[in-house]
Length: 563
Image 1 (cartoon, helix red, strand yellow):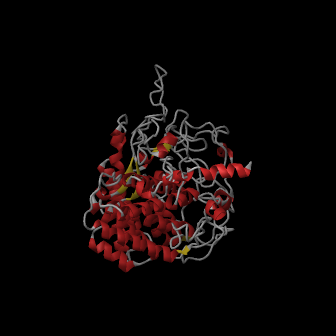
Image 2 (cartoon, rainbow, N blue to C red):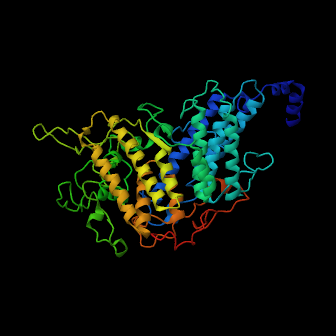
Image 3 (tube, rainbow, N blue to C red):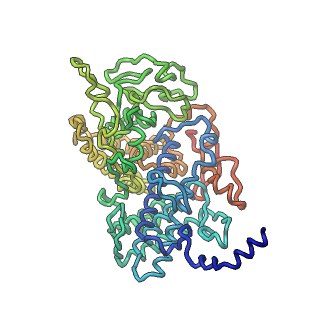
């Protein structure tokens, strides 16, 4: 039967079917360049959102779940970031995007080489996003793939390059992108989700990306040269961010944190007790924009009128606990005035507090502005006139994912300053820009009572007070003031806080982990497990103590000192 079937097969001219290209194996040149650019932008923003949230949890800007760092950061933590950078993987937002930045960049370069149409704009943006992704992979892992990446025929199992080599390669990509943009190439019908095709704005992004990397490596001469040139993100109009919409239909285009927090079942993620308490104690004018309180008090703390709120085992069980010795001097469980969140490392289960805990506010997620309504009930009708979070509340999710804001750059200038006066001036400039931008988001919540907004006099008094405190302080106190304000400003776009914390060890005022001995603070993450499993040239690490080449501080666990 086999011989007969073979004779029948060879007797037919079925092999001619091989002349047709398989629809499942289309050539990259058959792709739409504009869709490739869209895919890269969505993959890139997905990475920026994830990384900001993930490292923000380590630096207490966001809430971190896990008593032991090693157990809470498994090998799959960066699977998505790795695949979106190099090859394939789902994106959030944009789960329908399956091809990574480098893969699409290579396809665009091939299309451009074989086409009469100039796709320099597409390629330049791809190189910028790929370069930033490489910088960040080094910051997260200490090393990354570059020299053997994207060439599976020759290198099916690419080895990793040193962090210094990858940083150098990323700087090279930025120079290539700058050269492509110099002639002002056209969009060719593409959608630029950030600047609408403004090549001058992208040049500023390139220089700002250089600034953040020179800052990390301590290259002050190169950093100062860019600042002197002035062609970087220096005003709100230049800010590098992605804006979202209000559509609840699939696919939703709302801010991902809004989607998780403004649901029919209440708010999802907890807010950081450290950040809320810091802002409350400082009377920070941004606090009503950052957080929306659903309750006027948290069990175990004082309410907005200064009255004690009884502990409640059902909604916040730690309100009944005696704080352990290592939490002496810190807010252990409950923050006053209804700022209901969780402290670093708290791994308790999820109680029924979706309509009680503090939710993300109007900045940057376009939730609700906190006008002290809480879950207000009309005393006559019994109707809930302020039902807390829910679909379409506040700004409906039309917020932003900040990547590089002008206020961030001012703090970088302060970080690189060589005098207290220069650092003080940078602190003031960063606060002025940050608060102005944050306040502009109040208008997104059309139902809010904006009479609760801080006045111009309040803002001026706050900035003057912080700067005065900084100028009068010395040693750790001075460094802590600067770092606290920097971290507060980074809310929503926290990636650089991880780099700052590992470089300086400040602020030392952050809350400790819930566990007295959580293990060494993560200096880098484990390698992406998917890559390790499929790449025989890689071996998974056994700890989180590997240091990035620019991290020259003492080894773990003695550094950072607050951990």
